[in-house]
Image 1 (tube, rainbow, N blue to C red):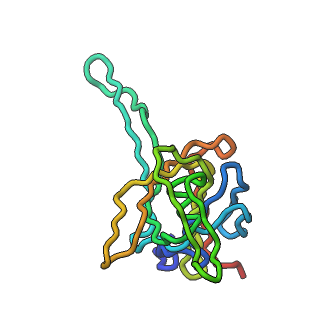
Image 2 (image 1 turned 60 degrees about the vertical axis):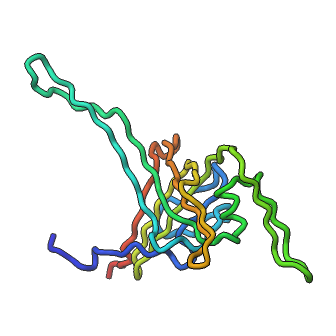
Image 3 (image 1 turned 135 degrees about the horizontal axis):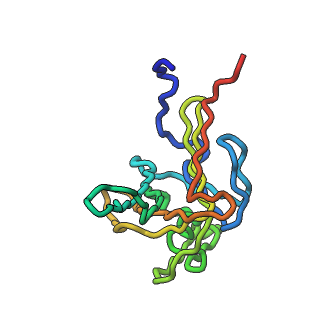
Length: 193
């Protein structure tokens, strides 16, 4: 097959949102374009650094007497995703970062805006579904993590020259239904004649 610039796509977020999440067990998509289930909520803007997928695998070489390598075994394997939330006033983001039980949101009234009370605790965040949406022209890429757990992985800074942001790492766990930590679906958007 010859080289084709149409096979090169940029990792831009979908206009409707690049990061989505919902309760563990929510229906997950099985392709790149089907509408997401209503249980999955968009988490709004992510920083310009985008989404990074980290795949780590450790191997060990088994040697026979005499030094010949006779087998390579895998001792560790992990998949994780890192990104930074920048919508610090989004209730769904706050729940994803600090835990739903630690966030109380009060709707705006005629005398006050929307209020959030956020507890910082040592509680471990629950597992949930994560979906990452990428779009470039007609091409789509969707990464589905049926079972992922977020951890806050950086400092939160309050400065006048930047926005309040939350750096997150989502560890993907092997899902019994898909037999995978995550699945990437793509659709180049080119229909046949």
